[in-house]
Image (cartoon, rainbow, N blue to C red; front, side):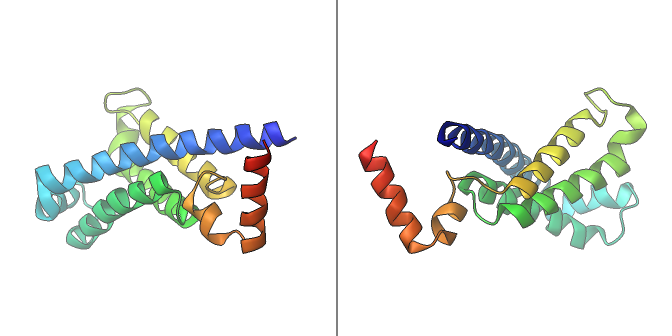
Amino acid sequence: MQTIRKNVDLGLLLIRLALGIVFVMHGWQKLTLMGFDGFAGVLASLGVPFPALNSAIVITVELVGGLAMLAGIVVRPVGLLIAFTMIVAAATVHLRNGFFLPAGYEFTLVLMLASLAVSVAGAGAYSLDAWLFRSKPARVDAVRERLAA
């Protein structure tokens, strides 16, 4: 049973790393290549309401949310925020282009479902969430287990 738990925790870590890298890079790209105003212009051209506000929200969710995924901190709410941004991206841009890349919705679908999976399952043992929110006796027991192994 312990092996299964370690495998699940490793799987969650790998999913979080993939999500974190993708979202940090996309947030960084929007921030540095387009800026808040440039991305707001893109959103306005797509008919997204409150483009300046939504630009700031999307860039923040992608950058900060990606970093949170990498660290494994507050991943449940972050996963929901990321999933929501992917639903909006699919609805405003990708659905009309069919399923397949380069312009279809397949990538946003995978990112949305992976984000929801992490929201449901949590960050796993290899995360700041596990370290910070585990009770102190449980931390001591975990260290003892690792030393005994």
